[in-house]
Image 1 (cartoon, rainbow, N blue to C red):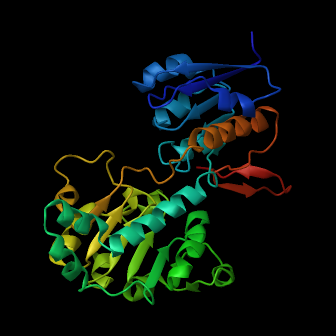
Image 2: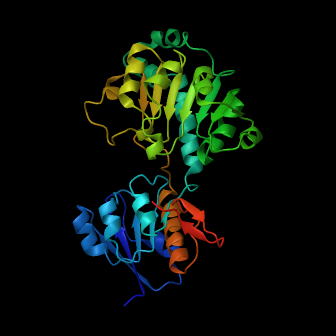
Length: 337
């Protein structure tokens, strides 16, 4: 019998031979068991005695986390951690890890593509050509300024937003950033002007949202924020759909508070057929694919295996997302929930 039991939630979109995870787990005595996650009880029936959990698509609720009897780590092969009840895991002393730097370049490139495509209204002019309305293409763009000299505002200035900067700088953009958790000197080193959120929204011609999905950022961008923006402004979101009030965004687009939105993420994924954003011509959509590339599986899943190996060997993981503090002895302890 193997020393460690590792449970993986079933992933219908992948061929689950776990060769990438196994690369990161080299040297450990383990077995990987796949447990379907149709319900909390069904998952716990096979995972309650796991030493480690691997997940990416299925939620791990407080009920599931509390039912884990000996789990030492929950490893996500994704950037987002909103599907895991991190607070419950913290209370049980279980580190939760993610892959914050694995797909940075892919998401940055997709952000740049959405910005450029939205600014030049590529979907709209493509449609005009296909509908035999060739002559209407040029006049359709006369109402918009050229990109050179415009202002790009980045909401949150983490790894992805920082990678967007060198991609967009050559287009002659001024770049602003708002992030209360990043020192202004860091922003300046990237050639970015640090500003408050209100100023960013008021000054930017293009607003690119990179907020993570947390309780504190839920619907942080709503009617008040969209009304601050310029009528010709473009709103881009490759952060998390939960950070935007979609009803307010749809109204902003319908009533002309802003001119266009380009979204890779939505509040509900996939979106309901009745979502008003699906019927608006001034919206560009992609299906939460910004991080996808040929290295997606290898990079993320190998990283998850390495995180598990570190913890099962008694070491600290590379990307622990739990809140933590130092106790009086200087040792790192879990922050009480």
